[in-house]
Length: 256
Image 1 (cartoon, one colour):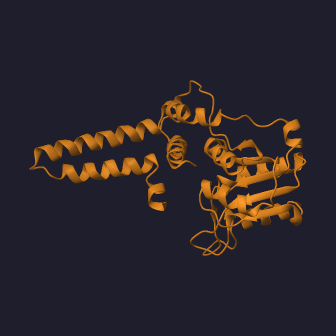
Image 2 (cartoon, rainbow, N blue to C red):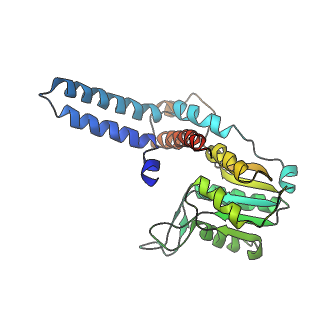
Image 3 (cartoon, rainbow, N blue to C red):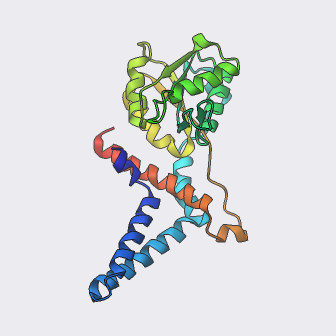
């Protein structure tokens, strides 16, 4: 699963195309292989440039992030549980004295704590399992940060085993106290919300799942010179969006 997930990104596709192209173009005595190699090199280069452009990244991102609007204050006030999905963390070790959240996780964490304080929820839940390089879990790292911000410990629940979006929902359904007709606020990146919302609705059919998107990456199109120049930031945005589109297809095929 980890290997498949690694190849479900356009950056991996570009690397594979360029590598195959280099290998085939080394076959100068075999005309067909050489020609195929040049085509692969061209395709990989075009794909890399296209995904690095602002309009392309926006085109891929907008349908994902526009699917669900942030909830109103009235909706937040009626929530019973706030669930925050992790987006990655860095375990302690080497030069790092303690575990830290990765950049995609900070906006989710902040929005989750903010929503919890604005809502009438009785429970703040953090989801995220361990990293292969350390003993800590992502959910416990978020819990420690929440405690430092004054959230009472008896109001926090952690799910410490999940590694994927599906596992977030499946394992949480076993950890949460039994109940139904609850209003569950789901906090994750706006790009990730469509897939997360579908999974949580299937895992919690007797409850109401309320999307609370965070970390928007879409920006309105503007005529600027820098928007017409390829950038790593746009490539990263395209990479994340295509990963989600593939994830939606994969989850649909699996019935998740």
